[in-house]
Length: 293
Image 1 (cartoon, rainbow, N blue to C red):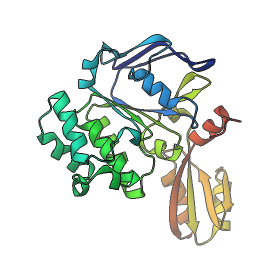
Image 2: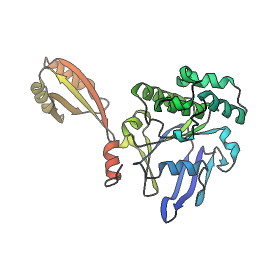
Image 3: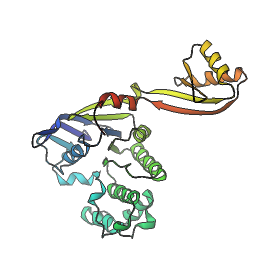
Image 4: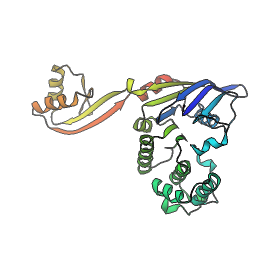
């Protein structure tokens, strides 16, 4: 049974083809990112997948059931944007409502609010929430039924660094425990931290990419003698550049120790090392060249 199966899915608004005959199958736990500039149709795709918007043609199955079957949401959750929240209700009211509708034990409210770190403002009205607090509530609402398939629309928007780290940790932990996650974003630096499985959406078409095939790993060294290190590494066949008084070099996974030994062998002190992974941004620019974000 596929966890998510999209068959020849299309969505047309008036004369605009937003989704064009998309097919996609996800049959294993993990994290997939739906990537593209704002306005490209990411939210529309998620809304059609969850049957919030009707498809023009095609079909979607979630956890082996049609997305038109309401019972599917006992195993599926969709984190939308904060326009679905009610300013005059508390966070607790939102979560209790979901428990009542889905007959979920009320103890899940405390469990999930503690998990996402919102105990301190659970009883406050949502109108007094910051953007980050609203994101925490939306995540709690999405997790309260312990979904096997979790769909998230821009879950990293508006988060401060601490909240973003918490969100990433939660997503990675859920995936490790067997949850399948599909999240939309245009923030490549955040996506790179949680998954290498990317679905690029452009002109109504999906392109699935394993970013492991496109990434390059660079190391930037702060050294006591960049010029000497540059000469030593060049002599051993490494492609090295000096940028901003630092030595920058592209390396494979098994080459770092060798380079460090060469640098130390030249009696050069290593003051700092920074790792940088590139590839997704370059591919994004190639795919969406000329598309405004």
